[in-house]
Length: 260
Image (cartoon, rainbow, N blue to C red; front, side, top):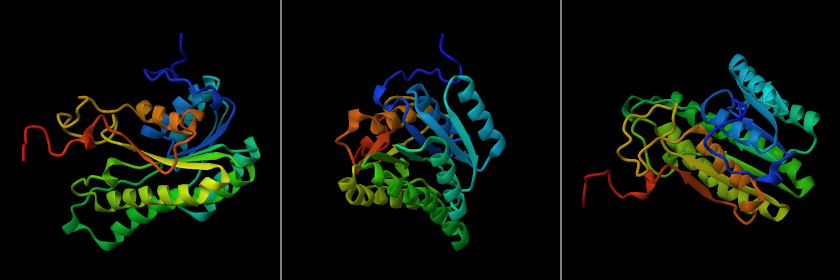
């Protein structure tokens, strides 16, 4: 019988990840929890972080009860101090960190004509800061080990727009570009950098599934499985890529039933 906190439909195993340490941001809910559960099944040691202390500690307790070596750090990683604190706690607990998963993000829906400059900057800048803050620390740390993997959680919104999500989609496009830039600069140091771009995911706000060829929303663990693959030695020659985990959503030119 599988342990409830670690069980799931996704069953791929990557033995090379066992005993390696990972940091997962935005790990108090949704996709972040799914990623943590999948990496926990791989035998990874986890440092989980988000701003929501109560929810986050509950996730960490669930994983710890299932046998995962897990540390929770409450922090706002969009701040310099918060990113530094998470990095310091991770290295103090586990030493070498092999994987950073930049999942944390702010999503705010406002039509562009009603969008003020302040909220736009808040969404765009916060989402990008939450990616590069910890990445700066981990890139230098991984360079010393000549090994490591950084994975950003992007969105199909970096490629195809959502109505009313200008700040969010623009930030994801920036993160896709940052993925490629980091891959070029860090590749010579043995560090791979990729992104996963989820489409409609259970637990998030979505309305219609008739535009998804596979006919269902992703589970958070579907996204976690893609992260585990990209972090594993099975993806040793993959860097600078954005992997769309969207059930085929972005493969189509037009919505179903519309022909041009």
